[in-house]
Amino acid sequence: MNNPLDFSGKVALITGAASGMGLATAQAFAEAGAAVVLADFKEDAVKAVAQKLVAAGHEALAVRCDVSDDAQVAAMVDRTVAEFGRLDAAFNNAGVMARIAPIADSTREDWDRVIGINLRGVWSCMQHELRQMERQGSGAIVNNASVGALTGNPGIASYIASKHGVVGLTRTAALEYVKRGIRVNAVNPGLIDTQIARDVVNGDEQAYAELAKHVPIGRAGRPEEIASVVLWLCSPGASYVVGHALTVDGGMTVP
Amino acid sequence: MKAALDQAVETFGRLDFAFNNAGVEQPIMATAELTEKEWDRIVDINLRGVFLCMRHEIPLMLKQGGGVIVNTSSGAGVKGFAGQGAYCAAKHGVVGLTKAAALDYAKANIRVNAVCPGIIETPMMDRFSGGTPQGRERVIAQEPVGRMGKPEEIAAAVVWLCSDAAAFVIGHAMVIDGGQTV
Image 1 (cartoon, rainbow over the protein chains, first blue to last red):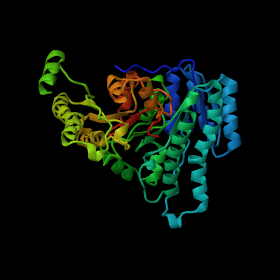
Image 2 (cartoon, chains in turn blue, green):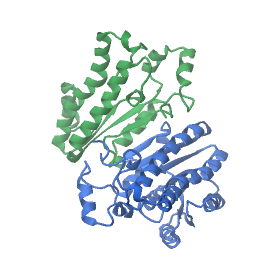
Image 3 (cartoon, each protein chain N blue to C red):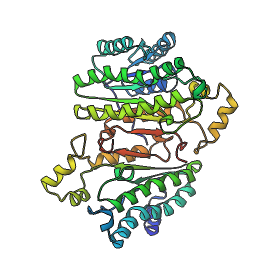
């Protein structure tokens, strides 16, 4: 029924690939035939994931990268091109949750941490990805925003600000590079079954289950359900989708 | 509509996907210049038509335990366009209707979403642009991507939205317009 997308001969870069949506997306790209570069600041974890993919017959490379460090981001893209010769798709997914506190009780340190990874990290990754893709005259980038780009949410101001910013950044990059053969879009995941979703409720499983029940579709999303959207946005089928933030949330932000 | 759907189910046995796409353009006309007749025509076909289609499709899908519906809105369903008062109202209405229906049936395994095409190379766009090279140039100039979209590029998105790959996409208005409304 579903025509699987074909990324054979293509190279995909995923940040935050050691777990969650990044991991699922790296897996999906690999199964679709792409050579994948998995970047994460958790070096051991991302190496283990890459090894598993290689053992399964895929082309995969692990790179340690803290996206809030420009030099590491530059090295990550350089390493990708050195190893695989090109960069066709990038999923800028690395992201963190804010320490939960109302604005007046939040800290400058936590603000800088969240903005540095979630927003400036995306900008930094795109800088280097766009340069490489411009050389090729082709490429597709998907930035992982959030339903937090569409609404306010008490207790996590820096996270919300960073995700709103990711969409603004995405739209601008899209307009700047569309005529150079590069498409830039974003996904806005809702409640997805990952560690960060537990962080929002301070690890309270019962609270998480309550949240999931209130999603219109009746459940949380699976990381694979974000991966499938990212792959499509990077595929030729999405050739006229430019600068769009695609919400994948089981209806959460509809009411 | 009911007759057509009944015939479809009689012929094929089921209805899995519906693309409620039939629509008409509005000639460029400032809001106060619109006649009531023109307003009714635009809103009837573009908005009420979508409602009527869903009204018959949904019971069929409920009977078989699920389905997917995609409604055609437009870039004019998320932004304003000068001279397009009735069209914008109808297309914004399609998004509202899509979202409400999505909430109504999310737990019943019927997913409802909308596509918002931009400037697509169709007979409707030819009528709208006048079909002349200058007319076409004028509409293409609005496109960051520098070209009209092809109908196949909308079709690809509709087919994808109907697939399991979009299983967590509910009540979304997907803009497919080469960056025009960005």
